[in-house]
Image (cartoon, rainbow, N blue to C red; front, side):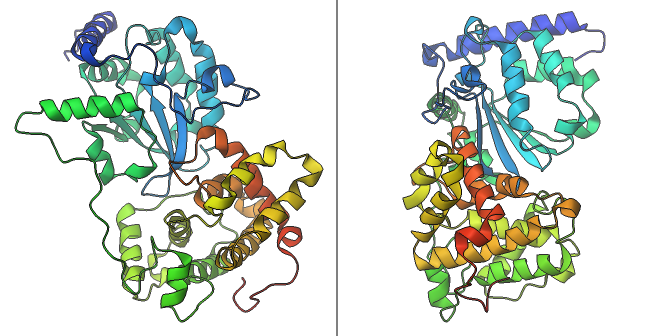
Length: 425
């Protein structure tokens, strides 16, 4: 864009491009805003009026161990049905739970139309509202299905956007490209966005790009550590009770990282994580000292838990965990104890090992800033998920409460006697 073009001219161009987008999409335009099935349904939620539309989702971590936050334009209802000031407050309310850690945002642009588009003034105010606290730990912003409207908007906001922030933006033309950066299966993608992507691929000259279907899984190696069950690891490691990945990462963090501020809150280079996972899966030794960064074993531990085929807090107890908010406060610890004790032995032993360690981390929270609440925000989504799909935004509160109780009341919930004292931290 020429420097002689004013902001007003750019805004008019943006409106024209948005209208063009609508014309191109007319054959696939939904009659109403698309709302994911896992949108917030709890009417007591402080922002239920906004959250019920499912515009914002928090869904596990990306490949770098960073919290993944999704914004879907197609879920936004017409502007007269949505208070955009409340939307901004809801965005900040949600991000406030995660901005102290590294996080990633995926923005699905499809579905933004003249009828539901916020005003230009609102967009400017929103960007200004998101001060350094929010921008500092935002490590990546993926804009999916960008159009000329998006590119013109970027030019309008260029005077406000720092070069450093601009480098965090990545345009993603097809959903398949997200596989290079994220765990695609974790994403909560509205059906309208999937249909739009299929149409784009079908119209692509020279044939569509590769499908987003995952390649068929390979059989695991005998030495495999990531992506296999606890029972598989035990069977292939002479009956070891605690997976080697966990004992080695926990031991190193105990020795070097208990007093590190923000331990478990920082990400590391994705290629480094891939390299270390490969070493473990091939049965080769891993020496964390050589990396010179205690955040490396911290991310490896979270990654191991996240990639278990069945989470440590198993599918069987997921609904009971979500019911914790309905339990009277004085009975919650005993409820947690009953749920944990119902787990099969492999899960129970590993869970006790992990929370013995996390309780130890929380006892140094004055220095490391990892209180039981902060640890719950980091580990909750890595310990439980539904059998189908991913953890919805509405499930985060009960899941975090449950995890916080396990950390804070470790001795009561798991008992003073260690079933495997020789392997506990």
